[in-house]
Image 1 (cartoon, rainbow, N blue to C red):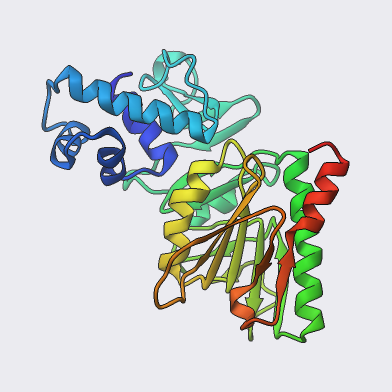
Image 2: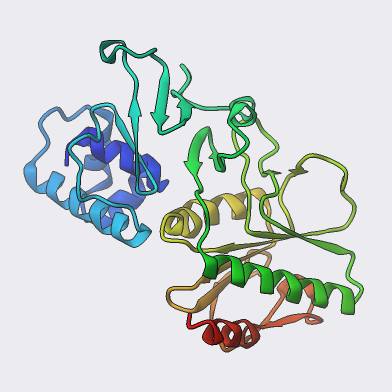
Length: 294
């Protein structure tokens, strides 16, 4: 794996230099020098350790790395798909990234896409914009949609039963998380409490509660990058549902001694922001999955 490939995949995974250093065992200062280009001839041992860490992270995220020959030379990897940069030498117009009938714009001069770029994309192409970088979302699997539909019903039932001043929304629903020009996310499920503009085209700011259901193409983004973004933006509670391992990890960021709690699909999970009024009996969802052979 070349350094250019490492940098592309590092961006795709939403990794920082600190994360790469922690996973590879390579000192942070060395990782920074390698990716900044200060070290022009890095030691093979360091490169091998970083490559190994990145390959492992790609496996965890479900991103293919069986053919890396193009990456770093005009190809950008995104969630298991390859995007070929058009160049003048190719005989096509410069400044586009193409895949089938879809094209992303190349990264702007300042290195970040904006919400204007987001709204300029074709409506049938689902992406998220996080800190100026586009992340392809793709179509979710059937198990993802089954869990999401059931969760929506259970959350709505809790809210209605206890007359909580909250609404529950399903994806796709645009959320301008940081209220800036560089981030627009679409959580799988979001709960908004209190007053807000229900007639707007998007929600401005941090929802009170967010649920993300992991897919092979989004695991690392949801578990690391979006965890950080949601916490920093002011989301009160973040649920990460993992169909592969049948676990739900709940992050209650408001807790004075913040410590995520992991539940199984057979547990009843309290909704933290309900002050003990509401809980989700996940075994109901699990039983429906079992009936479908999932």
